[in-house]
Length: 239
Image 1 (spheres, helix red, strand yellow):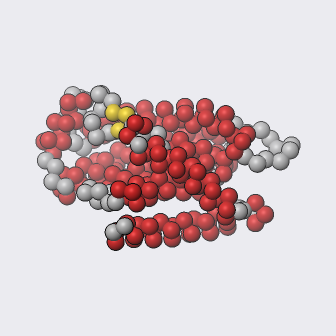
Image 2 (cartoon, rainbow, N blue to C red; image 1 turned 120 degrees about the vertical axis):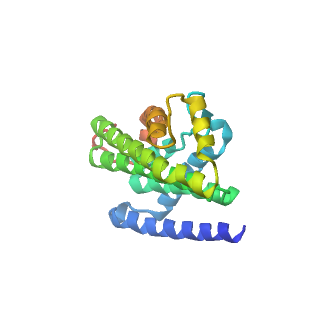
């Protein structure tokens, strides 16, 4: 490992320790087990990392710019978050991102794309899982996903317009005309690299991705929630 990878590993371990304390503080002592937390995060984090890193699980669609890829690494994070709480879901997202940095190192783009994915996935998973934690039924799932999707799509548009595109143009040296040409090959309606790109590419792309993630999460969680939870007798059936 080089120095950057060691620093990334150190920061990651500190974040895990801090999050573990938050998790412990938000749960009754009798129900908190650091071993269970680590095991759950490790299992679902590995699943999420595979979906994030293995090329076969990534999709490019001809009607979106080629640099927008569909990947479904949020599904394991949602399943973990619904079953064990929002903190577990967020840790799964962190594990996934950290594993990419540790395996491949910091890319030439300084990890801006990966950090953007981390922010968007965290917003998406955190909001939906927090709402479901308060309202554990189908209505809670629907409300959680609706609000989380709306917020995540808005944040994605803002980050693309004010962070991603300016970064690639000003820091990485990609000419805006070249970026615009790449966008227009997939979506002719795009007229600039700002809000036109956001509305005609980022918005529909994220809505499509989120819809697929919601469907996959719902189908898988409905099948697995009995095995994932450790509920006592007499508790109200959820989801």
